[in-house]
Amino acid sequence: QVQLVESGGGLVQPGGSLRLSCVVSGTIFSNYAMGWYRQAPRKARELVARIGRGGTTNYANSVKGRFTISRDNAKNTVYLLMNTLKPEDTAVYYCNLDGTFYWGQGTQVTVSS
Image (cartoon, rainbow, N blue to C red; front, side, top):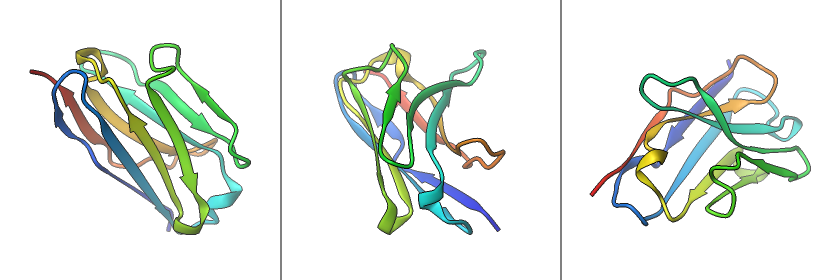
């Protein structure tokens, strides 16, 4: 059974940093691209960053230069390092096995003073 488990969310002040992790089990992690998405209250879920099987990365314009996605195939884990956080980054963050309906349960990120 495929499972994705996120961690690392929390409350942080504007300008702060967080690192999210998503551990994947039940499938061959290295065969898939991975994505991080987020959903703020009353807004649609949006793609934040994506990393291909070979490490190619793509970012939403709103996070370019502040967020970094990476993966460790030996640990079946994808990361999202978030720097210079802003209140508008507040959302539930989800990881996704690209091209599938497998999602994590989400981790809350709140940026507030």
